[in-house]
Amino acid sequence: MVTQAFGDKHSGGIKAPPPQRACLGRFVPIGGLDEAGGEVFVDDLRTALDALLDKLSRLPESKLTAGLDAGAGPARDGHALAQKLADAAAGIASWAAAVPPAVQPVPWVGPFVVADQLAVTGADLVVAADGLDAELSVWSGAVRGDLGSVLAECLATVLALSGRLGG
Picture 1 (cartoon, rainbow, N blue to C red):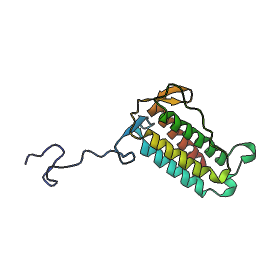
Picture 2 (cartoon, rainbow, N blue to C red):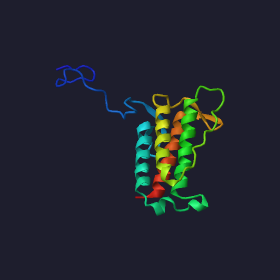
Picture 3 (cartoon, rainbow, N blue to C red):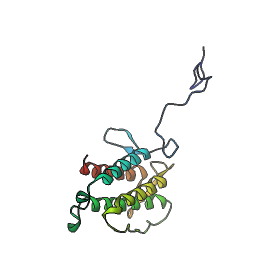
């Protein structure tokens, strides 16, 4: 039996194309190469953020607040990451602007809100990047960079903090 493109005799000639990772319901790769040589996807960033948020929410108070007096520790690192994600989202959302967006500081309101701040800024970043081409020139601070590189850097930072938290 002759089959149609992406078809076989059991599906009536209609078969889905090879599987791809979804990005907010779409199939959109968004980035450069990770260490394993694979493409960086919005779902990878979302998955890494979910894992980080889970780790932060399970940290005992003593570990979450460790180092606060010295301006360090998991809560401060999480807050710095929330700011990085917010800046990346603003730079992506303002990709067509002639000048970089103004920095909108993520307020420090205490260690117990950091996970929520990460969830919000991470979601903003995912939405800003959805459907855009990995090679699109976006703002990254005061300079331009390609979207894929900006997202790969965010993913690396999320994974680094997650690794420092262990468990």
